[in-house]
Amino acid sequence: MILALAPLGASAEFSGPVRIVDTDTWDVGAVRVRLHGIDAPEAGQPCQRSDGAEWNCGAWATQQTRAQYEGQQAKCEAVTQDHYGRTVARCSVNGVDAGRELVAQGLAFAFRKYSVAYIGTEQAAIAQQRGVHEGRVDPPWVYRNSQRAPQRDRTCQIKGNISSNGERIFHVPGQQFYARTRISEQKGERWFCNAAEARRKGWRAAYR
Image 1 (cartoon, helix red, strand yellow):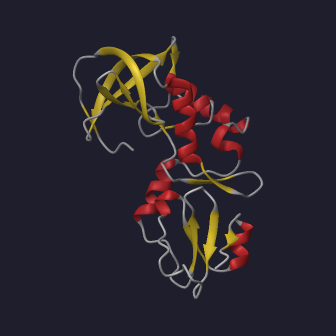
Image 2: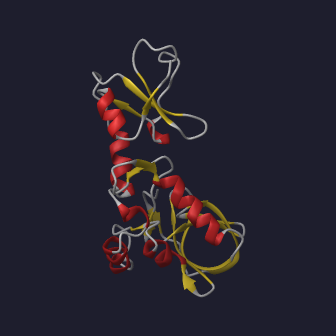
């Protein structure tokens, strides 16, 4: 996430090995970098596949990015600095613009608030249903805004929990583990109003 930009001064170039923090935040050598012009799904952000099943697209996008770029050498040009102290930069790996490539693969969005450079690339990824564009996905800034405001209808009492092995299980009031089950919407867990809705979304009932 990036909220505000501060002037950086003269353009600065730097390079180094890549360590992936998440899709749009990298460590390049000793520099914490926020890739300029893109915004990626948040950790725990749910998306919906074309068959209606939900999945954690934020974690998936980070995994895909790490598989491609972890340990690679990146060359970057600093643009500015955000209020977290990260260097906002354009980076390339093997001569290819990493931000553009991430958008092209459907792992990130064109961050129109800060740059129009990747809009055409994003439109092509959407048309080809690449990456997170396979089904329904909220742009990361829309998802973040939705998490800041109270969303849950308090009459919806069914808890949709994700187990340690990734299984999606729902608990209804009165079941053995209902009271101790905690819901973290940031991890993709959620509340349901009825069991039919939960099953439709790909969750199974708890056995106890």
